[in-house]
Image 1 (cartoon, one colour):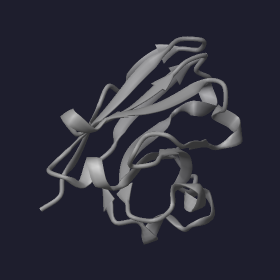
Image 2 (cartoon, rainbow, N blue to C red):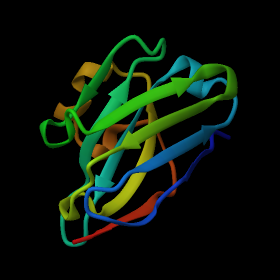
Image 3 (cartoon, rainbow, N blue to C red):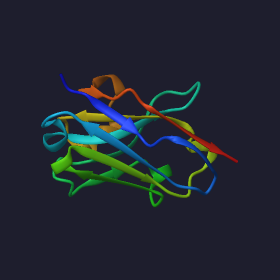
Image 4 (cartoon, one colour):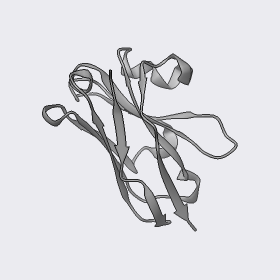
Length: 127
């Protein structure tokens, strides 16, 4: 049974930072591409960032480029999302995702086609 457990969400003011973590069970974190999606109230779930299984390729949605950084620690089965210069529009539930598909295609795929999802962690940015 694959499990992905997110942590690190919370409430911060605009301009602040948060670091999300995703701890995965077993080999999935070291053998799969990993990434993050988010879903704001009343909106569809959207791609945020992804990183290849080796960690040498990262992809981001345009609105977070230059502010968010995705990284991974395969030895400890953990993926991170460092979020800086946060904006109120970043408010959402953030989900950790693991998938065997090419990370460069994640932004073009529907959310229901991915292999594994975490339960999500709430991120709230106040103005």
